[in-house]
Image (cartoon, rainbow, N blue to C red; front, side, top):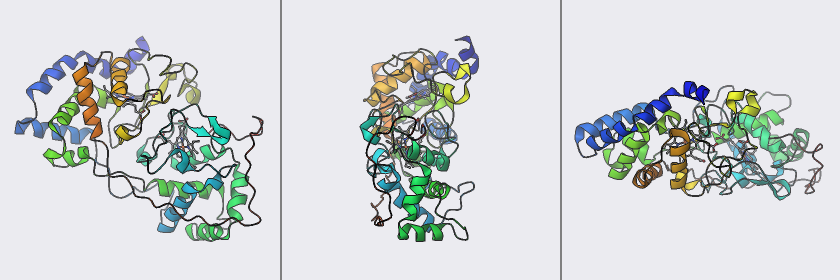
Length: 371
Ligand code: HEC
Ligand code: HEC
């Protein structure tokens, strides 16, 4: 506990001063021009709007043909051993980039250990996965393809599958010009990354507000924004995605119930093997959070308002009163942006040499690595 206190003093500081914050919030209530301007500027300094266009990707030159290839691969179930499961299965572009399951269902109807985070805006994450074990989207995408409980495939089989389909061979050659073996597992990952970087949701009410449209947030949402900042939520949920920027113990102030934070998932501890990283997770993206229930890495909480209250007690050390939980929840609804319209691609047909689907469950040691 003492260690945690030292690691996160500002959270405690803010928790201690939350009373002051609430009073301030009331004094600077929406309606007085000066207060509003201050809050707009303050919010603009903590959060950033989602851009209309994808950012540059380090080490991955993005071209239209590479994005198109990535779109095909994202929707192609032949990346999985069963040829039934695609990225889209668990990160549905029509459902906020997530799957509405507590924890994902993968190969052989196996239930995975964690909730699927959204792929939307994930290009801005400091690292990928709840525990940050993949440094970027390209590295990340190799995980689920091989994970036994997800797509359960092997890199060799994926490459053999793609190489058996002439249209893919052609597209890989165009997307990776000048390479001797363009159809590779690495290039599959790069193409998927290029496509995923286009899955952005600009134009949320919060973005309109911080870029100058005072009426974009309702008065209640403005109160919620004030509380979100003053009570310390934005200490961990800041930046362009209001999350995805750092790692924090889930249970800074008080351990959540075992149902919400199962004891067998120690989070980042498994990545770093450092005692202080027990039950440490990446603060998730709060963009579009109102449409990507259920919540937390366990997916055990279905109501956003309940998730907000759990954050109050577990991260800040106080119960958010009914009304305060309501208005923060209202504010979180202002994070839903324009959803990307992605047409389902027509996928190039398999050929006689395409490996056949494998739907049986493999013994553990033969199946793919942990994603
Ligand atoms: C069976 C369901 C399933 C499939 C299929 C799947 N994923 Fe995931 N995805 C998950 C789950 C569950 C997690 C969280 C796992 C963890 O953190 O340990 C995740 C995490 C991610 C993340 C990290 C997001 C973040 O905020 O950290 C990205 C990006 C992602 N998946 C993209 C993909 C891509 C691309 C594919 C296809 C190659 C894919 N996923 C296939 C379930 C799935
Ligand atoms: C000390 C850092 C910290 C603070 C402060 C904090 N959070 Fe979180 N938040 C996290 C972490 C870490 C998670 C992921 C927990 C998990 O599932 O393992 C999370 C998860 C969430 C989720 C679930 C999102 C999802 O998609 O599953 C919501 C909603 C949320 N926080 C809102 C808030 C609100 C509102 C506040 C203020 C009342 C707040 N948080 C304060 C770190 C923090």
